Image (cartoon, rainbow over all chains, first blue to last red; front, side):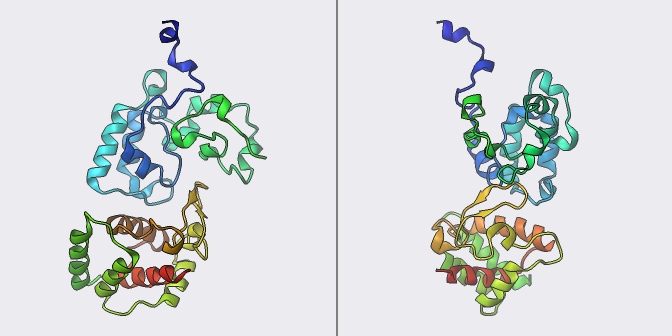
Length: 143
Length: 128
C-alpha cells in the first residue's frame, strides 16, 4: 500500500514512465535516441513536426499519415507543469533549464569526449536511453 | 525523373507496398525505371563522393558499408547497408524510397534519379 504513495519522480530505476508510440520509436529513434516526449512543450513539438525536412541540419521528413500519428501523440504526451512554460532555444531539449540543471555536474570538456560527442547523445552515458530509462544506476560515463 | 520512370516507379510502389521485396527485385525496378543498365562501379563512385553539400553517403554508412556505420551528426550506430551483411536491407520499397528521399536531399539537395539508385544498389548488392 505504501508503494502506491511513492511519487513517480523517485522512480530512478523504473521503466520509462510513458510507453513510447511504436511509430515514434521507429521513425524518431532511427538516427538518435527517441527522446522522451515530456521533455519538450507541445509548441516545441509542433514546430519540430512542421519542419522535419530541415531537422537540425538534415531531412527527416515523413509521409503525412505517419507524421499525423506521431504529431498527435507528441501533443498529448508533451511537457506539463513547470516544464511546459519554457521554450528552449531552437527547441533543443539539451538547452532547457531542466537539462542544464540535471547535468550541471558534467564538465563542459567531457561532452566532447570522442565516445560522447555532444549532449544530445544520451545513449553514450545513459546505457538504457533507447528504452526510455535514464535512472542514475544505469549511467556509465565513458572515458 | 521522366514521366515514364515516374509511372513505372509508382506502379512498383503500389504493387510492393504491402509485401516484402528482395534487393534483387528492387534493383530490377530501379533499372527498369531508369531505362539503362546499372553500373556498380559508378554506384561506388557516387556513394563515396560529395555532391555539392556537406556529406557523402559514405560518411555515415562507411566507404565500404559491410559493417556498422555511424551517423555523422548524432553519433548513433547505423546497421550495415550492404544486404549480404544485413538481411533487412532493401526488403521494403516503401522504406527504401523513404530513406533515398531524405538522404539524397541531404547529400545532393535533390531526389536521386532511378539510375543513381540502381547504380548504388547494384554496388551494395555486389559487396560480399
